[in-house]
Every structure is written in structure tokens, then in C-alpha cells.
Length: 412
Image (cartoon, rainbow, N blue to C red; front, side, top):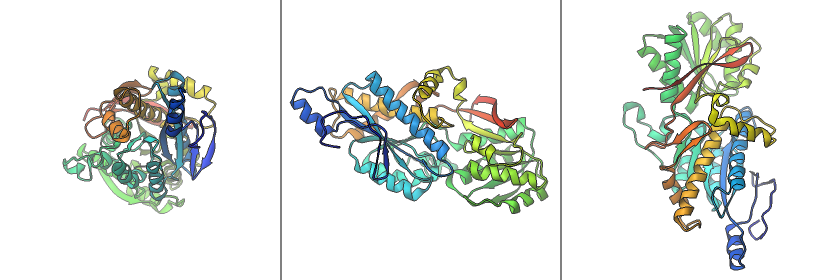
């Protein structure tokens, strides 16, 4: 690929990466510049997400939305002299493959930014490699606070581990408190049973929720843990039934969450299951054989279908002919990619229209100053690389579908 002098649009699989668009390389550009050619320099935006497996509905939405951002930037010539290419890697929602993908992305010198991953646990396995390489990473979905504020954030000692890490999704510090406040103050539930899946995201969210629920005056009647990819949660369901809880909070993903909700109801406990953004997917409802009506989920941001700023994205996504929907994180993925594009633009503009030799470090510096009106609203980052957008939504299942019932900007 590196020695071709023509720009080529293709779709191939190489070394585990799905190349969605392909163009000439920087070596090609130098040769063509010597000949007076107008060939553009290639900049790659990497993607890491679960493209196969139980969470692939979310991963495919991430991949497609980043692809749309790159194609839009190329069509509109957003960064003169630059052609964006996208390479997607499948992490299977597992830390091991995620870290291997990070190593591959770092090795490709044309990669100046990465969008992903979906899972906070996967992000933990990737951050070190990106940090050493000064390669910008922007997650559209990670919510665990430690990723940006360090392991001691809970005690008030916040320290950013890697200045290369950013996210367009708000943290569980916000989401967990928001969920507890809604369940206690508005749903009027006072006795909750808390379950988590022992993973970074699920356990962290459940702990924040439980702490806030107790501060509000509620009671956590008991707790339990389940294992990812298991399907029999009847022992936990029986405990919930016997506890007298009036609600359940589950920290985890929709495959286990849907089955847990189903088995709780089969055990005879007709109470709502609530969770975070990882439950907010149609697959949560499909995973349950019982009616999910009344179950609840919080999600970061507002439903993009309600946002005037998302109208063009929705239209362009549909026109793009993507097989899979943009799903819960499509808008945040587009904004993550566009933030990288804007950072690249700032760096290239400051260097006379050329990509500098230390482009990765320069892009990371530029990311801290990025600010624009995106699909999901105002996109900018605070001193930890966290999004400044603290909008959240509560959804409930009604007649077999998710319905928005509360939109709010969280005030800590």
C-alpha cells in the first residue's frame, strides 16, 4: 500500500484491521510533491471496539460513525492537504485483544488518533501503550472515573494518569449519582438490591450508585455479583425475591442485564431493574423472555433524535447505507472522531499546511483546546480530558421499547 501513487477507495482486512478507506501514504505524497502533484497526505484515525460478539451492536455503531466523520472531512476538505483514512480493530470487549490492537495502532505511524474503546476495562489495558507513544485516544463510551482522574479519585485525590486520554461520554461519578437520585426521588424506591458483573465499568458504577442512594436515605438491602457470559442468574434472582427489595440496580452490560431482569421476574419479584448506559440498547429487551416494561436505564447525553445538532448526522448516516444502526454511542463516536480531525487541523495549520514530525504529541496538545458544536452538543474537554457535557437521560421500557422520560443537565 505504501508505494502506490494513486488514491484508492477500498475495503480490505489486513492483520486484523478493517480498512474502511484507503489513500496514498506520506512517502507517496513526498514523491508526488517532487513531481508537482497535488496528492494529499494520509492521516489514519484508528478505531477499537467490539466488532464481533454480544456487544457488536454497539461496536459497529462506533465504527460506522467514525467512518462517516472521516468521509465527511474528506468530502468537505476540512483539513486542506489531508486525506483521512479509518482502520478498525476488533477487541471482542476483552482487555487482551484491546492491548494487542493498541500495539498495532501505535506501530502505524500514520495513526494520529484513536476512537475507542467501548469498555472501560479494555481502555485500562490500552492507555499505557498510547501514553508512551503520545497517541491521542478518545472514547465515546468509557465512564469509569479512574481512567481520567486516577485510582484515588474517590478520596478526592484526582490525578490524570495519561494526558493522551480523552472521552466524549460523561463519567460514572455523574451517571451513578444521577441514577440514584432518580430512583429515590422520582421513582420513589427506597430499598434497592445492588448487583454487578465484577468488571471495571459495572462494579464502579454500582458502587457510586449505592453510595449516593444511601446518602439520600435509601437502603441497600443486599448485594451480589454475577459473571459475564453466564446465563443462569436464578440464585441471584432468588436472593432478590427473598430480600424484600422494591428495585434492583445492575452494574453491567445488556446481555447479562436482560437475562437478570427476566429471571428476577420469573422468581416472582415484580420490581424494576435499573442500570446505566450499557443497558440502554434494544438487545437488553430482546434478552428477556418476560416483559421488561418498567425497567430503567440512564444514558449519557440526550437522545440524539431530539437534538437539532444531530439532524445532519442522522441524515448522513442513513444516506451512507450502513448496515448497522449508529446505536447508543454513534453521536459520541462521530464527535470523538471530529475532535481528532479538529486537532489535526490545528496542528497542520500551525505547521504551514504540513504534518509535523512530532504530530502525535502536537495533536494531543491541540486536543486540550478543541471546542466545537458537535452532534451531541458542545464538545470540549476539562483538565482531566473528560467531556464538559454533563447531560444525561433516564429511559424506561414501555410496550417493549425504550422511551425517554427525563432529560437533565447534572449539577454535582
